[in-house]
Picture 1: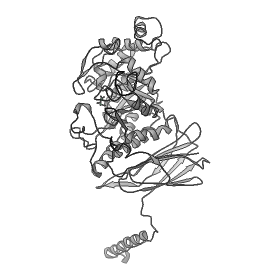
Picture 2: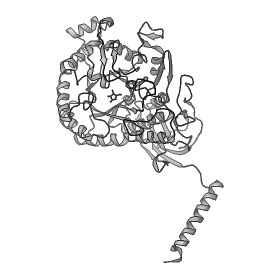
Picture 3: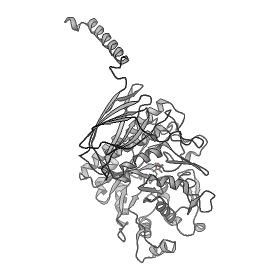
Picture 4: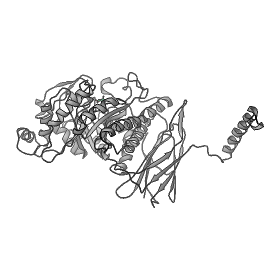
Length: 527
Ligand code: AHR
């Protein structure tokens, strides 16, 4: 053994090294902050990020539709044709590309004829999935389509396979989209809609492996082909048919359904909900939690990357051209319901943690946008990871709302290749990357970056090298951050987590340096 390899000498050398690192860091020679570097190839755009990744979902569930969006024409709450003006105005600003309706689990027990004609004549049903409450069918096809007009968004109809028939679904398609002379098209006219609607997106069943009928994959694939056969393109309206996929990691379902019915579908769905504890029985609270639940929520959210990658790899086997989209048409954080609420209403608060789950999930979906071309966060108002919370005539925008506002810059923009070398955020021995990001270039040539610092306590400096661009000016920069990991907006303090202008950056030639405070997300434009 040489002198230098003697254990006592090694120990002494390590002590000296640690001491010098400690002293240097005090003298400013070694930065105390973790460093992150990012390289963007601005001249090598990949694929378009479909704006439909930014879709929303509005089920007949709790106060999501009734109370949250619909209050009826006679309400004291200002409304247009029954839909509350404050909520519509706030949602319209998000430029929602598509809105999924009427479910969810509700869709497979919804019969569309219950929701047409004079409202006073519509039947009362029981919403068996969500709280066993009465469903008076006040919002039906015509009301929902009016909502899509008010929001300037495209409808995504989720049709009933579980308890409906192929005929019922085929008739709904004809009722809505046929412009010629038929009994169903004329019934639509009698009910007040002269012109046929354009309705592209049709989901054929929802969670058919579970609440949508508890089917086996092969049986569903047969049913899918049968239902899809009779759903026709009328009057120039081309249907985009979405098969019911599985949730999380049931790759076998995807394989069977794509193999046996892939040729008849435009997309297959994937549902993934972030459960902070990983335990559906006790999911964890949506407010008043500490760093443990903050870290756990973010870590669970990042699992979306693996699910999308692996479902997509299976699809590659049957569809190497990527003709069929993966439609992540339910995603978001799902926590325990708020105390003293109907557990069937899925009401939860929405914290800065949830905003970062949204930003990091959207980064993952953007990254996979060569395969993921449709997605819907669950759900728009008052349910799960909502954009808006209402209480009587009051409403507030959640932290997640602001993320969707920031990420509008990526709608239909070109994804730019991004290489990220990120520091770790370590909590009790577990690691996740401290930084997540998306870079895109819009039609006008502006490069937009959205960058998240997931770290609960440490600010992060990010050095961004922008290659292949002469952009030298910052056009937009906003930040969303908070004073605590569980910070939420309340009706008494609706702007605790709200966007601010972001100034903590420097731009020298093609190098942009960003200094992000802990638990924050920014949007920045370079042109
Ligand atoms: O979004 C709530 C429910 O979650 C939906 O109704 C169902 O599809 C899923 O299980």
